[in-house]
Length: 106
Image 1 (cartoon, helix red, strand yellow):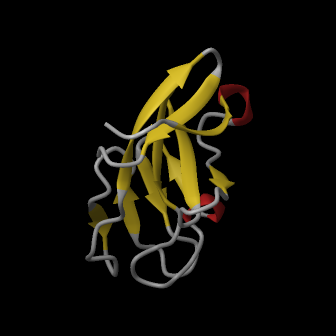
Image 2: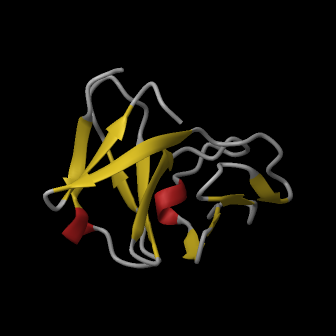
């Protein structure tokens, strides 16, 4: 099992307002709050190289700001055209008010 990586404080993530996080040795990440539960995906859309954290979150869906494609935040699966390739998701742990990922687990 790999070591946990701290991303941010849970207080930094509001409902339906994803946050872009930059951490050494990782691609840009997006952190989401869906009904009080936290999720993390790669931040870059697989279709158009846009930041998903700059997109529009509604519940467990994130819409890319470039072309309107969308992904399921929980699974990374594309849910709207033109996106067809999934985004990477990460195993998330909330501990002592902070959000961590376990890099090798999905």
